Length: 336
Image 1 (cartoon, rainbow, N blue to C red):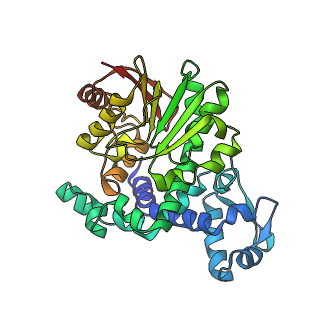
Image 2 (cartoon, one colour; image 1 turned 135 degrees about the vertical axis):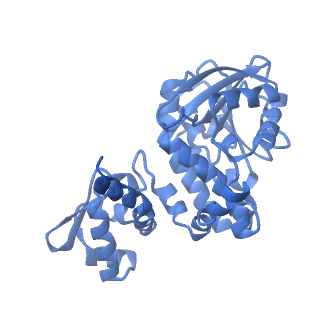
Image 3 (cartoon, rainbow, N blue to C red; image 1 turned 60 degrees about the vertical axis):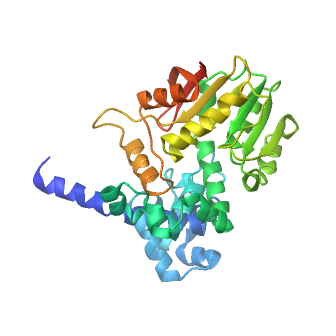
């Protein structure tokens, strides 16, 4: 790569936040959903989304320049294959995540990344004077946006997890920190004789019924609210934790895992669903996700060896790690 090309590429990286913010604004406005029935002019979209016509056109043409939309004659816009992922009902929609990332409180934490790098402290705490979980508890509208984002992300990985791992041997599967039940609904739907327990904070699982009912599994799923640091419910022979451990430091992660160990049936299995850090110079997606953990919740992504140490400290033995695609692995453990 010559110097000019390198500089151009680096400048694109530096300005990457501009593309991200533009996509997130389009998701918040619901632009993709407005285009599912075909092309519409920027003025029509402005009316539908209560936006300033010229300002919206400038946003739309910028997104068309990076392939999210396509601009035709007369300022008419259509969805591209790439942009389809912003539709709220797309099978692998990222709309929920994009709407959350657009929120000012979230972006503000990232603006304090330098503080984290210099001190090792959590950027969100520095920016807001409290941790992200407390902030969301005190701002219920942000909790709603976060829960929708997690449901969106769960649907992104659910099929890959179900294709990679056989859940059929289990009688009862509990999703610990399972949000509003998107993953557990998929597990139960594929295993008609199975029962489930959905466990998360009471205010989170309060909104789970529609997801479980839509999947026709509500009658086989018990919904329980609580605190996984204190205890998790008894009665399951498989405990699933998707994107839970990475939110916390080692001490708090071990506390969650020990709660699982105390409640697990004899012969049960722990299934931690997380991204695994790649060797040096590889795996940019997960390594930048790790920076997100540093900036926002205060946790971290981990290597396979680091997961093994967490398991050992919690009374589990790591038995195998299964790659379920670019976003997630299944880290299986048994009581030691």
